[in-house]
Image (cartoon, rainbow, N blue to C red):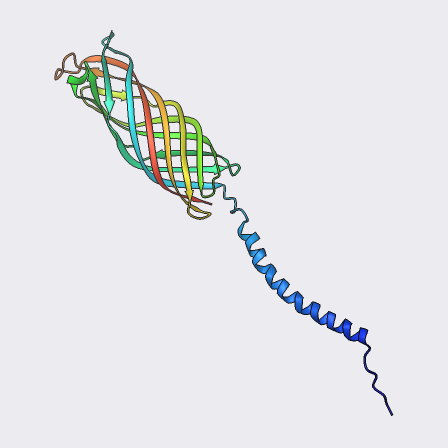
Length: 243
């Protein structure tokens, strides 16, 4: 006859402890999943160094004449002004780090009409040009969550594509170069798309020559030479994309 031995008390206790530990392990593993997801969600956005931006620019001018002369005689008390214009703009750049970037920007060259002021006011529109502004700047970007304000500076170029006469006949406005400062803010929509507002202040000096009339409405036969000093504020808003 075979006899079945009853398990000892300490053996039954060991089996119960093993079963209990296995049952407690399952909820613990499930509870770890939300914690892992939370850690993953706090990970920084992928670093995308290349960016492009498109938008519209309003250009505002503060101009003056330097060393203006007609037939060798200095022009005293005369100036000019150019009204604001709006044009399309584009910018491309590269982030060396998450904070430091460089970019080049420009826009569709608008038509400008320069009107005389002071003693030149009776002459009306002195000349017309189609001029484009190109800026190359380096900037530092701050990080406030979705907001990224930035500041920087660099160079500005004024490129003249076309000259047209007004009171000045045969006007020739040369290209010019100067400095620029920039400030603005990017607002992230996601890790690629953003909205931005950008303000650049550029100052450029250009040489201008042509033929001027001795009196308003008279024939433009006297040689004119001058330097055109422009302080240009460019206000741009639009959308950006990072690669």
